[in-house]
Amino acid sequence: MEHLGLGWVLLAGTLAGTLAASSTREQDPVPIKKVAMDMAQNSFDDQYRGCRYKMEVALEMVNCTEFQNPLYADAWSKAKEKWQNSNHPQVLQWEYAVAVLAYTDNTGLYSEFNRAVCEGGRSREHYLECFQFKTMHFLLTEALHTLRKAQGRRCYDVYRGVKGIHFTARRHQTVRFGQFASTSLKENATKRFGQDTLFIVHTCYGVPIQDFSFYPDEEEVLIPPYEVFKVTNVMSYSSRSIIHLHSHGVCSNYNCALVNVPGKIMEKIIPGVIEKHLRDKAVTGHTKQRVQRYIRLTAS
Image (cartoon, rainbow, N blue to C red):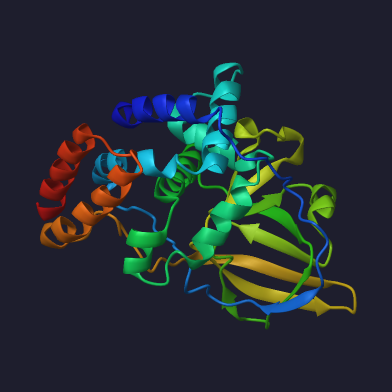
C-alpha cells in the first residue's frame, strides 16, 4: 500500500503545526442516562471483503481531504513518530500499525471517530458524502483482520467499563456495539473509563492490540463494529448495570461501499467533491487523474 503512504507522510507533516488542542480519553462527568442495546443498524460496519486493492486506490482520493481534520492529523503524526522510534512486531503494514496507535492515543480522535462510525451507515449516500473517516475505518478494519489471522482466530474474555450510561438489554437478545469498542483483558483496567455499566464479554473477533498501543499496560482488546453478541445475563442495580455478552458471529450491512458504486454514478458524485475541495486547495490535478482511474476500476 505504498501509494497511500507517501500522501500520508507529506500531509501529516504539513498539517502537524496547525493542530487543535487535544482532549483526554476519559470522558468528563455527565448525567446518567439509559440506553437500550440493539443491532446498531446505523453503524458503518463494512468489512471490505474482496475489495482491498480497489479501496487502496480509492483512498488515494479521500485521504488528502480527511487530513484537513486537525485532530486526525495530530493523532496520525504522533502515532507515526512513535512507530518509527519503537520496536514493534512486523505483522502489520506500517499504515495499519500507525492507525491502531493513533486510535489508542490521548488526542480524542477515538471518540470523534466512533461517533462518526455509529451514524456513518444511515445510508450509502450519507457514508459517501458525510463520513469523514473512510481511511481510518478501512485501516483499522484491515488491521484487525490481519491480527486476528496472525493470532490464530482466538477468543478472549474481556471487560469494558462505561461512564454516564446505564445500558439495558434482554437475555437472549442479539446486539452489536456498532463501533470499535475498546475492552481490556484486566477488569481493573476498565474502571477508570467508567463503572456505570460493566460489560463482561466473550469476543471471537476482537484482538489484542497492546503491541500497537500508547498504553500497553491496559492490555486492550479492540472489538470491531460488525461483531454480533448474544446477551447471556443482565444484572441491573441502582448505581450500575452488568451485561454479559457472548460472541455470536458477525453481521455487516455494507461491503465495499466506497468502491461498489457504479462508475456512471461516481462520475456524477466525484466532480462535485473535487470542486468543493479544490476551493479548499486540498485536491491537486494529480488527484483528478487518480479519480479517473478509480472510476474505471469501479466500472470494471
